[in-house]
Length: 64
Image 1 (cartoon, rainbow, N blue to C red):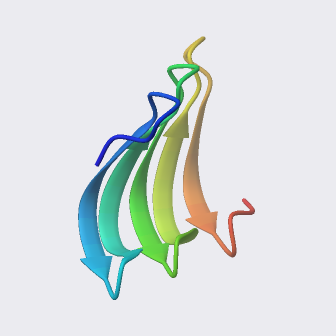
Image 2 (image 1 turned 180 degrees about the vertical axis):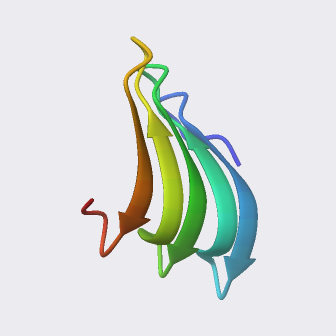
């Protein structure tokens, strides 16, 4: 799904919310690939910013 600002989400949905595994690409070029629950990053995931810095670990309510 593409957002108006150009961001995109490709992954699982439940009741209209990102839930399960998915990949979100931000307009800036940053990418999060991993687990979602109720439209928030929750569980194991990898975040790579547009400059190549990477966080590979666990998330809770969009927080590392």
